[in-house]
Length: 184
Image (tube, rainbow, N blue to C red; front, side, top):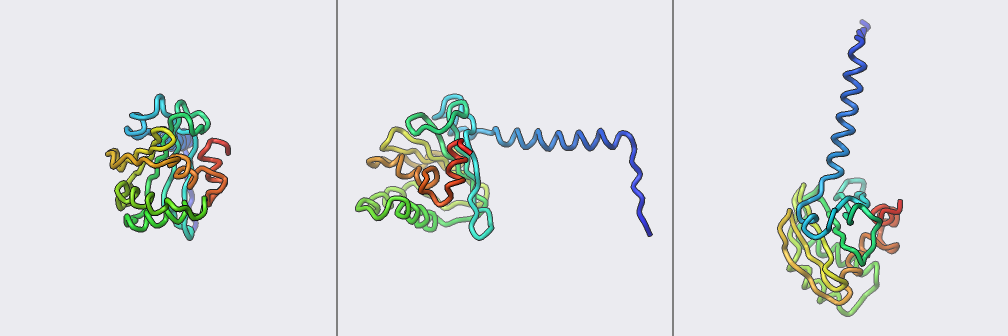
């Protein structure tokens, strides 16, 4: 038995409206700026974005916000938002962060101090949780979890060292780093 699809003239219009609404909805979601980003970046707009996958599974989405969506400049205000798609324990986040920091910059004598400071900032995350990191000069970063500031971490050169995990050419995914910086 063959099923016949009857097309009416208005079907084309309905289909076009459906696609437009889906495209508009995507655009609206892409432009949502978390309130904590608005608190630290004037006229924030997304400069770059990407996602991190592990063994093919999406772990988190990354969005970099800069003033007016300008290309990344570490000396200008910015915010890195990480929205998680999985539950991850605090200890796993700490271990992953420190592992990447050591991979990017090699073993350094102050890694234990940074780990201790990060332990006070990090929380375990659930699917849908958002962590935002915002610099407060070259030696300081503020961390926010779901809109609430969890800590301000101060350590010599910390901003550039921490952000190198995602943004530098030494990051695990150079193409992603380039997209985050607004270069690709």
